[in-house]
Amino acid sequence: MQIVETTNEGLKRAYTVTIPAKEIDEKIDAEVKKVAPQVRMPGFRPGKVPANLVRKMHGDALHADILNTAVRESVDGLIKDRKLRPALQPKVEMTEGYEQGKDAELKVEVEVLPDIEAPEIEGLKLEKLTVPVSDEQLDEALGRLAENQKSYKDAAKTKKAADGDQLIIDFVGRVDGEEFEGGKAEDAPLVIGSGQFIPGFEEQLAGVKTGDEKTITVTFPEDYPAKHLAGKDAEFDVTVKQVKVEAETKIDDEFAKGLGLESIDKLKELMKGQIEQESAGLTRTQMKRQLLDKLAADHDFPVPPTMVEAEFEQIWNQLQAEAAKEEDPEAALKEIESEKDDYKRIAERRVRLGLLLSEIGQANGVEISQQEMQMLIQQAAQQYRPEDRERFVEYVRNEPMAQAQLRAPLYEDKVVDFLFDKAEVTEREVTREELEAAIEAEEEAEADKAKKPAAKKAPAKKKAPAKKAEADDAGEDKPAAKKAPAKKAPAKKAADKKTEDKASEDAKPAAKKAPAKKAPAKKAPAKKAAAKKDAE
Image 1: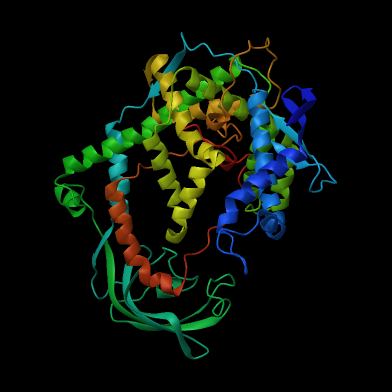
Image 2: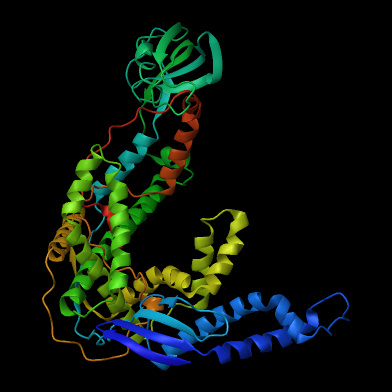
């Protein structure tokens, strides 16, 4: 094998690799001798078919296999011989005019990882913003839970149904005089004003009393999922079996027992822990943004253009997908198009931080265990159909690049945790709103920095570059979008889940008739949160 370097510019390398025809021919001869004993041919005893006949019969197939193997081995040999550390898979092309019996000439283009100076991690200082759970927060969370756990009691038979009241109804629907599938139910619960049924249905039941029978006429929306009903007029014969009014929900031991807990104290303890866990996630996000911003400010080195382009394509595809969902897709696309250069700089920042985190991890012995890797593979396999999971697992086990993509997020988290342990951390108690505002401010600062190239720093000393396997798509901070202040959301909890499940069961009959009214699409800023990976 002969190697000639044709390009050496920055991180780009190009080579011409020549595989002698003699070498290819010798490998074909060796393969022929290997397979000849298994070849069967009329007129010859098993294992006695002459090698020249085997080559004549299977020469083309053998040549293709041997050539592919020779190309792969030559590229691997080139990388090893020149001590290259590819950023991505090398681009390999066979020169035109190749024929059997001639030397094979390859053009190999590859981008290498930069040499990165091992970052100094001693003396790192971070501020940790913590949010203690106040009695007010806990009361608000319990109030939200009680709101989701509404119960109803029978009203007087003379009570006329109004907004917020629940009806228990039987109904039969007809289109053009014929009943249709899903248009009939018994003992279906319906809260007036909930928007659970198609437009016009609930409004016509306002004022009914227990025992009333009423025929209502509605029109299915044009975008109704069942195409044979979309836009059609329908009549529903409705029997009101009971009018119910909302019962007062007392947040006490009985309320907690209804959710499967021993007492209200146990419920409060559970909810407090989950609020603390949610706040801890925000605290980690804020600390990680601090950390990554410090690393980005202190390090500047060239990054492989192909890695940057791949990262940018990921950002851009997400932005375009989000823009397509807007009320005015053309305006949204025009807006993100005007900021395209910003996103390219963001992609570069992400790649640089990913390589930097990888270098820190390798220099300090951060690793992903075999057991952790197996768990990652199995978790990823769950996204596929049961019959395809084993094939996916086998693919990942044999494909280093696929392994790198699965490994990267967990590896990043482990490196970040390592740096948190090494840093001098000072804690400060703040409110939830203050913590969210701090995160928003950091996001805006990161986005603003991305709008201008980073200040050039002195070239870093040469050091062993980060491995692609760990750096590839590492979870750098993703400051792609300026987003609105985070909304205060209730913590997810087991009790809420049970409530949601019950509410879901109650709503099932309604789902057969009509979906909830479609909420109007909200106009979102062009810089989408979906275009970044939150540093959480």
